[in-house]
Amino acid sequence: MNFSDLLESVNSIEEKYPPVHLWNPDLCEGVEMKIDREGNWFYQGSIIGRDKLKILFSRILKLEEGNYYLVTPVEKVPVIVDLAPYMIVDYQIDSDYKNIILKTNLDISIPLDREHKLELRKIGGEDIPFVHIRNNIEGFISRSVYYSLIEIALKQDGGSGGQLSLKSFDCIFNLGEMGN
Image 1 (cartoon, rainbow, N blue to C red):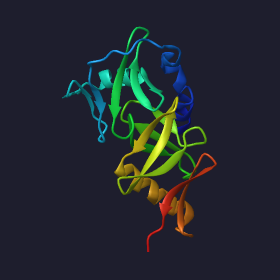
Image 2: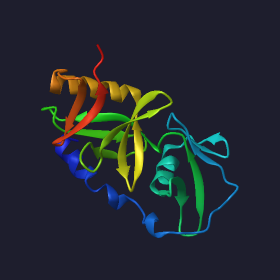
Image 3: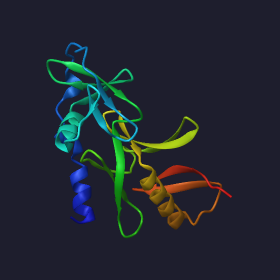
């Protein structure tokens, strides 16, 4: 798939999701769901290994008043999330180093742009990059992808100034301070 085809497919991301924002069922208690810091999903303490099942669950995920839930028309199950439901595990960049598409661990690709902004947050003493994925749900960028984005920013910017900035789709994102 070429870059323009990929960009066209990511622009239709919302069509793949059921209208969970319209569903307000009763809370189903006693079910333990968790997404850990490594992007692993757990049900009742056991890891969910099947990617298709995790992808299905990710499509019915809803953020409501700061809490995550898996939602169907008839039930709502709380999900404990360590960092974010999605993890950015790869990327694609055009030949001009101007447009970046981020790829998640759950079969979603998004452009790094105005609607999908990158933001650094300090958690536990470290800066962690987050990106808006959909419907106020975020993903965190894996360390290896973050380091690659830093390399791209250095190529774009030449490392000038105290802040390292990454450009994508005519937007500028802060990647942190330049070290000495």
